[in-house]
Length: 257
Image 1 (tube, one colour):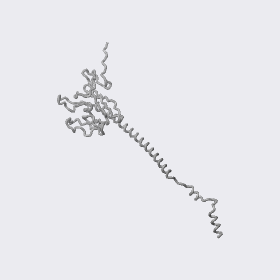
Image 2 (cartoon, rainbow, N blue to C red):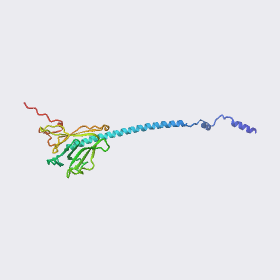
Image 3 (spheres, one colour):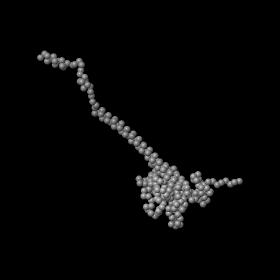
Image 4 (cartoon, rainbow, N blue to C red):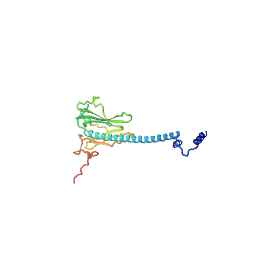
């Protein structure tokens, strides 16, 4: 009996060296629900900020690529028009029903038809009847500048299917498009610009193309003035009209004393 009491007293007395296992269990504590929710909120805010920055950078890159692509389209279109119109040929694609005169060109305010050679990536060689015109756009509001072509050999102006079925869309989002023409007057000097070219049996000396885009497109079209190499009346004062005489006739020679 005495031994049992001594053992119980000894076991209930505090041990001078506490167990490390018991101390670890007493000192450990977990996260509260509020702390977990706060951490999740902070993580969500960080992820939202990172995603917003990533999306903004992607949009900026996309806008930059679209702007570069649109600017390249303007440059390529100017090169195409300068080459094709400038190298227009004196070949007839139609005949005037009243005078039986050959029709080399039909020029209006927003359309132009002529004959010229095509680059290799568009045609198969030879002379082609080519047409540049403004048509309604597919996306509503804006208009499109399209390029049509058909082989001159066997071309029938009265045939509705004379053109290649799929025209080449050169530019979009166009607000206004004008073509002006300039020839020589009776004195052999450059005349005024005309919105319509009435002399269909001969080529004009100069063709000017002006385009205005919608404000949202942020595009600009430098006015394009094209000299025609084979213009039948492209002679001023007995000399061929070259690029240096695009705006005015050469001054008369000073009289010799």
